[in-house]
Image 1 (cartoon, rainbow, N blue to C red):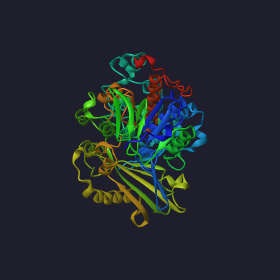
Image 2 (image 1 turned 45 degrees about the vertical axis):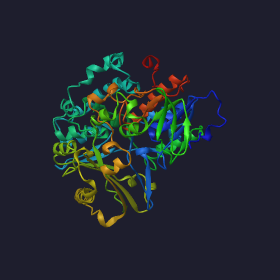
Image 3 (image 1 turned 90 degrees about the vertical axis):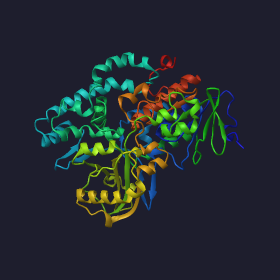
Image 4 (image 1 turned 135 degrees about the vertical axis):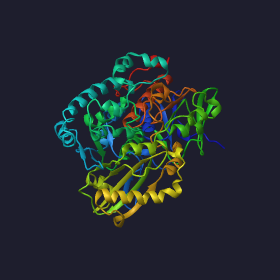
Length: 521
């Protein structure tokens, strides 16, 4: 028997109720903003913890983030906290890293990425004296490009006409849709290592610089212009702080209670059913992996633009193979973030695009204990190892391949670092693309729908879900895309749309959020 959520008892009858499905960063941000707008908000989360892919786990005294391991562009999250009358910097300690990370190429070149332009130019000169003077030109052009594109990432795209608004017309000359990120970078850097140094960031979107649209040269600029930050305690400290602030504001967060179905009255969402109760509502915000969550919550017959068949036909990002290693001893000679790039990066990309596990993979290692002693017992280290791989479209048998690939990665990691890793492992966890799928990630594609031109702007799932009424989307699978800052922008857009539709006063602190009345028409 379904029960009405007793948490709503005593709520004024005229109050607007919003249910947020998923306590990931986007869901928590939307909950905070809608609560600040005056709505009664309940968050339902299938896991026993908040954070979604930004959750963490503790094992044998070691703490690991599951997904993101650094934070970019804190301005957008500061605006969300300010809209709720709080300060991000009072709630989370953010340490700015310099160097931001180290790149190690198989040809022997290294590159310490720093926001200091003079030192950055010197790093480039060690690889290519000819290209080094263009570092400043690259940064200057992408600073201007980011400022032009920022308003586009802060508003909804509800149809074709949104492509012809003034901000898009202003940005179009800089769009260069006929170029990839790598091709665009050839205007500044002839040496392939330098192009890779300023383009590997497309991996944050789950794509390669050889296919990612040239728009995304701005991703590297965000690092250099605004910094790379480590939240003390790990990236999960951010959703933990958001949940704390949300609860103190009156948001109800129900853990271990996932949504099973959105119930409708005609086209209008009217309630969310969980295993424990039915929660009546005026709107639903879905913060889950779009391609796996929406088909579960909304029957196929209710969806015209995003049917199961159409979702299956879309392009999806790469996946990742993960090792979380608790290590005895310290690696103080290793940087906080290090990327060991494959010798044949193009072949690596081809294997990933084919859905395969690369033979000579690129490896990212976070050695956070050099910055944050809270993550491991004294005298120990946490090593977070991420390997980009194909998603499950390639048919790899990860149950068989996983243990074999673990050995390959440990061999390669030991060779690259000069340290024999195995004898010092004190605790360990492995996650394969198949494991990501079992956690509810479609095809194990950890960065959601790919960010190609046909799956951006209004071609991406819209923040006001167009197939039904009263349902809004936030997260990496919707506009504007993947990455924590972008997900927070999606939360601001979804919250503003829902507030407009529900007749609520959107909180004034998020200054960059546009007015959406015209877009809502």
